[in-house]
Amino acid sequence: MPGVKGLRGPFSCLNNARYGISWGAVGAAQACFDSAKEYSLSRIQFTHPIASYQLVQNKLAWMLREITKAQLLAYHLGQKKDAGTWIPEHISLAKMNNVDIALEIAREARDIHGANGILDEYCIMRHMANLESVKTYEGTHDIHNLILGRHITGIQSFTREL
Ligand SMILES: Cc1cc2nc3c(=O)[nH]c(=O)nc-3n(C[C@H](O)[C@H](O)[C@H](O)COP(=O)(O)OP(=O)(O)OC[C@H]3O[C@@H](n4cnc5c(N)ncnc54)[C@H](O)[C@@H]3O)c2cc1C
Image 1: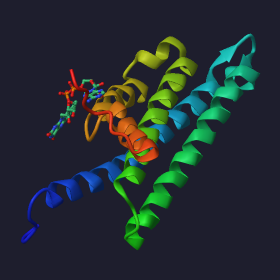
Image 2: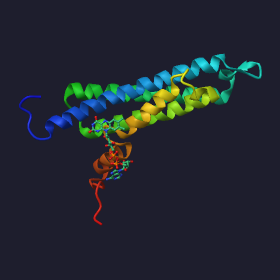
Image 3: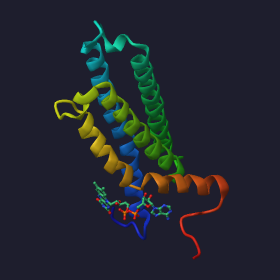
Image 4: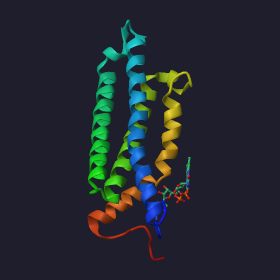
């Protein structure tokens, strides 16, 4: 970005990358959900597909619920970005939440696939390994929590006097 001075350029780059991650995590979560849904409809246990059991349906319903909320969060953030009203705390909240729920969805999807969930024949472990690194880069989960904590309380807790 020509003409940009100080840290404005890098921070703008980070804001946009974190916004992109909030959508990318939703995509990974959706892929895990789709695979879990398909697998649960085809895997037969005790003469019925595991998708017919309430515990499995509960997991699928939870996954869909969290994906829908994460989509709405990223969409709302995009609207704020377009309107020029987003602040870094909005971006922290979306990046942190969406990677967090995507990881949890990947774990539930792995569970629904049983032992097959660890095979690279399915997409789950690839997404899970990727999401584990996304949890750390572009601001760790904990640091985004601290950014929100500072916004809520007015007290920064990034550093401590020893
Ligand atoms: C796949 C991948 C790609 C990457 N790509 C890039 C890149 O392109 N460019 C780049 O610059 N970096 C990149 N990184 C580095 C990434 O940004 C850092 O790993 C990340 O910022 C964490 O720093 P760290 O690894 O030194 O961990 P640390 O800072 O040591 O953190 C370790 C743990 O301590 C916690 N912690 C740290 N400080 C505090 C604190 N003050 N209060 C409370 N908890 C704290 C963290 O949340 C974390 O849980 C990449 C990392 C990965 C995994």
